[in-house]
Image 1: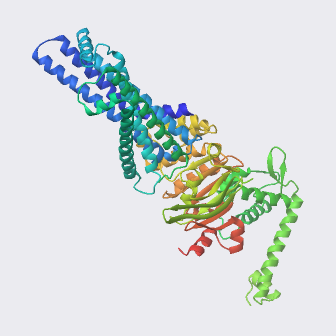
Image 2 (image 1 turned 60 degrees about the horizontal axis):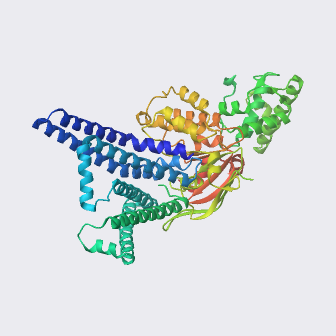
Image 3 (image 1 turned 45 degrees about the horizontal axis):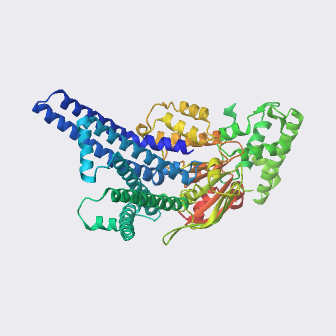
Length: 261
Length: 123
Length: 231
């Protein structure tokens, strides 16, 4: 049943997103092509604009990754369509899991499209060398691609964390009678602020345990490489913690039942 | 077949007794002939736009009265025994007349007057 | 064991009492009319049985079990609103029902759609409102369920459509199963009912066999209803 639900969730979310994906890639290829074909000013300008369009589409991809996932949740679990959703012979938790897995898949796809577009637009041996140089200059000679991957995973987890937090806010907001949407938004911001404060507290605790991190907070200098790793792993753990917390908060609340208008 | 089953039900009275009375009338006036097949419960319910359980109950009563019978696999049929139907018709007539006469007596109409009135003779 | 039973079922919205202490029992093989004025609590009761609302008190049992996957497998529910994704085509929604409900009879649905000359490739959003309602009815009646719950299936339709809807219900519900029809248009359907439940201001006023009630009150269900509620 999870697979079937997931199929319909993905279909709905990707219906719009796939257009953004396609346009972003097409613009990236078009821009690169124009820059490669001719070195004249006209083509430089046109190529630049086309790459800008690609970047715009990528921003659209990111925004829609959030919005489509949340909208799908509200429409499917609380609006008219919920009359079908909740009368299907499936558990509420399966409905919830399908939505979450769909959001994870879509986030991954968006990430892949972003990397792909960057690659199409900018890949050359020269640029890769420059990137490597920049990393070595700013973080020391031991810096490697690993740091980029870790940052990528962090970004991915941040997106998932915000989406799960959104689901939890929607579920709690829709428990009340009336003004369900407004309350969801308020809960969402409230929960987000609260977790931000929590993560700051965690950071201070980490700083208390490790003085290098405390220095990071107070000084503007570029940190040591091992400290950067430390922070990256640390935030990875924090995001995972928040994701698990909001996942169970949303799940437990949804399992207690809904009040559909 | 379906045009036989056109009943104007009166919602004020139990639907099931109205259906029984109607079916009796169909049988004793030979609109439903002996051995004729009766539609299934579901078909009748659909035809008359009434509840299948009501039809079931009514047919059950008709069966008890011996006006219809069930062939194991083929469904329900009108009684084959014409004399039985005739006898039932007589009973029905007596019953109706008795009811009518009782009503007249209540209105203090004498038997002679009733006969005169029925025959259409002036007083 | 009852097919459906509610025990002291209640629903409150903040301080507003939508449903109070409802105890009903529905047996198999019955057509039951859930009769009440608009806003009497009919839809609230039905939504509670279908897991769309969380009870404030009491419980709902289907074949002795709390509502969940097993109850949803055997209840076929027609809400009083359009609930299908409007961007879907008719064939998409047929596939959806076929995928999720083991008891969905696709051939029957196709036949009924064919009777309406409804094209499988038409988008639901492009169909008339009346047609969408008929499509929903067909989907719901094409399930071989044990209990059909139809919320206001006759609301706001013309007499011809009313006949079509009643016919579709009567000729398609699974033998031996039960049907609950909620309505405020009693005269139109009272002849098909085995039992009637009167509901008013969130409370059950009366539960009775339809013919027995007619005999007792010497009046039609519609008339009895009017007398009770003076409307």
